[in-house]
Image 1 (cartoon, rainbow, N blue to C red):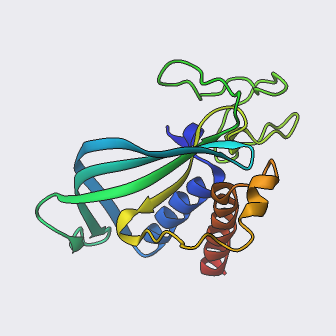
Image 2 (spheres, rainbow, N blue to C red):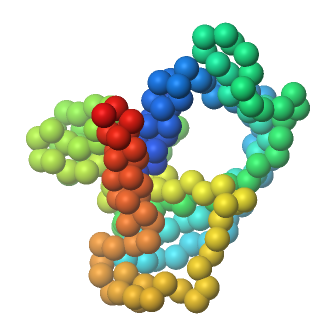
Length: 190
């Protein structure tokens, strides 16, 4: 149900991880999820996109189970606290549609052809990439705060990203993530 809100890189990462777990006869199960805070961390315009970073704090009971024996492989008996940084992106001027299902695209926002977003987020008629941030917000990156490393000083050449209207660090990371997880899935499947 959340596919409409995910960039291709985030979607590929999540589905590949689920597939790898299934092939290993494992299932990750989260329950008792409680969001304890969402706060803006930053907003900026970079590479022709608005980037909104949100700090998301939550607690959850998180277990990995063996699907054959139903035994717990990892996890604790009590909910644990976690924090993530979520980066959302969209083009300036894109209008967020109202309602909880605002990105449940029934028609292509570029050409108007009927469509349904599934594993692919590309219009079959005009080939527009719907989950690119061009038409509305998409979740382009999820980073565990425990693994977050901010680069200081800025990446050499990062000034080129701001000069090119279609390049952003989030966009490049999303494309790289999509390629990486496709490579992992391909290697695993032989």
